[in-house]
Length: 158
Image (spheres, rainbow, N blue to C red):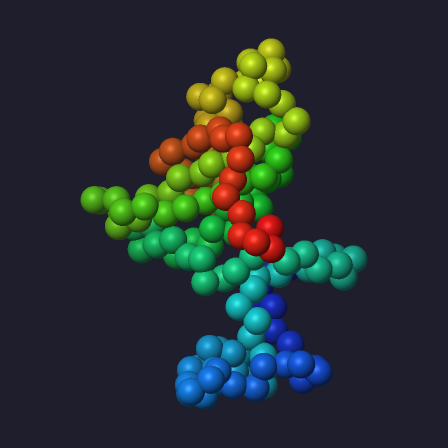
């Protein structure tokens, strides 16, 4: 089990060969970070069985008190909670830490009223998510705010 940057060692049909009017930027972005490989910009997790799971863009980074933390890394941990269907992590300006972190999530097939029947309030769920993130990543990665939402914004591709 290992995670890291998704890089490709061989060219493929349709591969980008430059950025229009800025070839230097193309080289610096995709070929310089990992010499001999094309850097896709995505993070990946490989299981011990050899399966790959894309975990998101590596350029979505939040800097919390000097610690660089990928939003996809935190979302992956949050999405493993039994009550969470999907989540989004964003940074916001913070006076002391530089950036703070907020998590919004959709509950898994549970309405807010039914969440209470299962023993979850927003406060207890927020505490569980903070504890889960603290154990799986680090204490500094725990969010300042946790919010239950009815829908998350999507790009056209989902």
